[in-house]
Image (cartoon, rainbow, N blue to C red; front, side):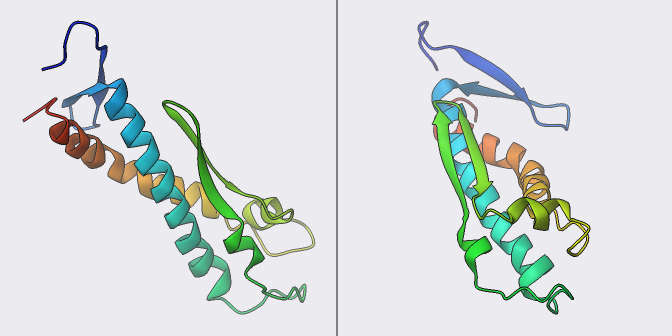
Length: 131
């Protein structure tokens, strides 16, 4: 049970249940989730781009885009997932000179959002916040 100097937040899991989360639990959740979104983004890129025939624009697949996907923690309870290749936004959002949008980051986030409640419950159990 958390001591009096530890703040506890309640996270709703979308099923009507609440999950007790401390700052430590939230930090672990953010760290795991941002890493998972990075992984899912690479899977999405493979499915949406690399396993498809090349676009008529004639670009050459070098792997630069998928290798530019990463994540970092930006604070104790914050993180970000990014694609640093300069043309990543054109693949993600589409352009008049390229294929339609291939929203690999958005799709990756959606994949992780479905898993977040179970991940939060597991972390809360590991830290003894729930049974």
